[in-house]
Length: 613
Image (tube, rainbow, N blue to C red; front, side, top):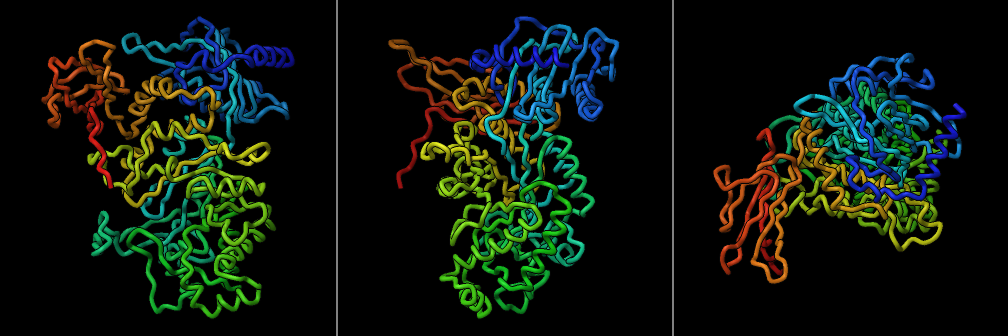
């Protein structure tokens, strides 16, 4: 072991001066910290076995064995101590080492992955991405690399709203699988809101019996006049199901952060227990349309007692450090007209309702702290004064995160402009119904979570970034995956890869193999529209290149501005067009995957002019 650690440290020293830019096309996402090709190739077959340095690595070894079997048809022996050709998992215990760092050393007969458990798991993901299958011979091979890798940020998150639309345990597990494959490590599970309460609380059964269901759901964007679908909708997770998901995530080194909304976004709870509402209204029901209810929790001892008992059960299910309490979009109208709320303000010397909101959050923060937990909330928790030790999730731009970091509070950046995956992926009218906004793949990839305005030690308070998937217009898992992929891959590289090594052209090239894996694992995804660009050289006749990221995709195109269809001119992968006259072409194109099951939206060149407002 000491000999191996010496070799490991030597390799790390050799590679420390190398840049991942030396091999920007290594077929791995996210791009590793450092990687060097050895020039050799290995062929992985049943002559290989799997070894481990410690029996506590057995579950991870089984994970690797099972993925090699399911993804590549390789059934390797375990533990395989007698084999001369082997994959070896070596656990290190250096307290100074980043726990998510790993080293991957490859030659034709040996693959060694070393690191602490989380790092080993991420090394396995890198190895799985490096493997390729020859379609004719069915042999599995990989180019050999020496890799020393570690993440840029330690909060690499994906959020999922299950209140507007509900997703099954199996669908949640599939979501976690794709997160793990791309080294994301935090699952923010949005479990309560105005439109539904999704977590069983045994002491308060009405939360799911009443709050878990709504009488119908608004159709499309029919706000005014409102149109409902006349179909009851709901669902919730039992505590046993919650435990199952948390354990599944834990095995993939993903921490689950539950969100229990307060003091607003709580109509599902108030419909279940109306006495907790600041507004005394005869009847309340779970919200059937999208948006924010003006009804909020009353800041009374009874409410805090209720929330403490709810949080007790939540904390028993989720062992992570952080509990998300929302704190966003809290209407103050009820508090302004509530005699009880005004009395609380007077008794606690609060000047306005913003300070009352801060008082509410701080009361919950003190309770969580007494249980050894920390509070996280959306950036509105800054209003009226920030609770001690609270972590801020900045979604209304970066301003809240910057303010919190300057106050020495930890921050997760999640601005709507670059991290809201419920936004459209293009400005085409052919995109499915969505909440609005425009967030293409390239814009996600270009995000830098550390603002330049933070200087010196302030930057250390940026823990990382997170993308959010709100599901008002995501009714099923197929649409969920369409909105998630491939943007999740761009987020993964934002959170992992050193800023100076990010390159969108390299990323697009490396994405080619990832689409094949999406197909293999039966994930829905958005096929990026073909890229159309002018290739004119100085003095040359006009020409245009149409290319696509998807391997073996068929591109259908027209050159007269008409809408292409499956009978239009087509080409595989890319096509170069000459104008043929002085009149410029009006190109429209879309791509269809090799199996014919998925197609992109139409891309247009030249792009239409934007209408001035």
